[in-house]
Image (cartoon, rainbow, N blue to C red):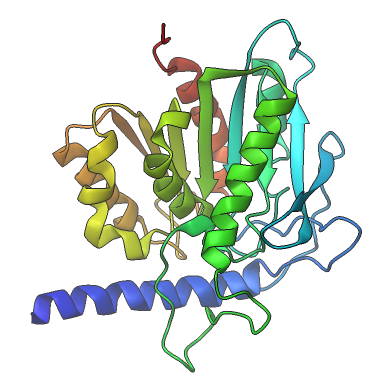
Length: 298
């Protein structure tokens, strides 16, 4: 009993650190006609300059009926995409305090262009929606992590629905290859990836989680992964210098995947922190997705 208590206290402390550091390192951008991209979380040194969306990325909105509001999403379509040929699709889930543009910039766009991908970033309702995944919040009065007073009580549900709504919108508009549809995410989005991957397993050919802040999911990792242990390839990436989501948590996820004899790959990158892991991971993620597709159905 004491061991279990210590385990949850350890997770709670780590979660508190995550919330506190991301609150300072990745504050949401002010609302404009389209929300700007929040900076990637780094070493907790305080807010940096607001990063504007990559000019190659389309800024779109749709009406989210469940919330009765217009929701933004970001979309990049490679110049190699045509109506005649089914194109691969990646859904990208941002970290806490980021937005729909956070993972759609820099080398991610370069790699999507080269590989002929469609790349889409949902907002997930707001910067701290968690895409439906469970999250341990610090105790009242603790640092960060408190739900904002204007957040709806069903925030996680709305965040999950927003992702799947955007996914469906893209599939209806474009000729998307159902055998090459993928999910990736960073930090909070990494937790969302490990949650939405198994929940909607029939949609994904493979998933990739970068420094997943999946603290609350670790005690049930085996139960969550068992339904996909024989069907879905999983890529897990982590920086060993990450002081926001410590490497030990990714290692525990990797150990659970190993115990289940899953088709997985764990990549731990020396010297990379919670922010730098994003750009460093992209080539590995695109290579992994290029190598994995679902068997064709007849």
